[in-house]
Length: 160
Image 1: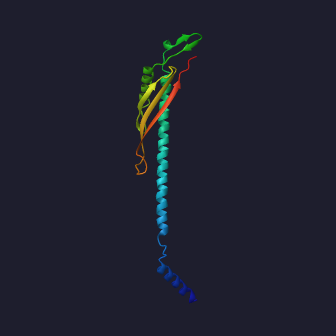
Image 2 (image 1 turned 30 degrees about the horizontal axis):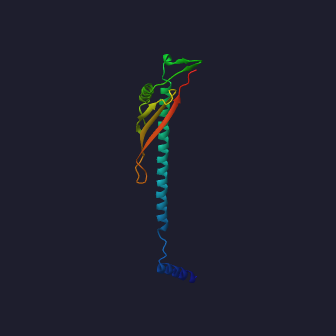
Image 3 (image 1 turned 180 degrees about the horizontal axis):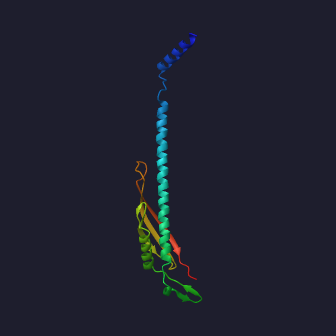
């Protein structure tokens, strides 16, 4: 029975002499992995926020392009042989896109939306480009605080 306490004391003396103390090493690893996990969660939240904001902006651009493509009057339709032909003009497309944006609130959760381009390349479809600035839900050293987002949507008016 007396050999066991002597052995424990000699093991403790050996650890003290060689400096192999392990007190606190688990706590440091726990803190490091906790900070790493928190940083990973914040990056995922920011990336999700950016993705959702881009989807919102694209939905707004798609609606503006559709409204602009469908904004024609019946007297603008021409008969071209056996087919009916409709030509969209850039000014009408821009006016309808701006009216749609005003009706939709003129912005997203990120902030105000800028109409970059509203035109028709082929006189049959409307192309609308919108831009906004996304701001991160929180500011970190390793994440950008602001990112410009620009989307383009095209809609075609079909008249039969």
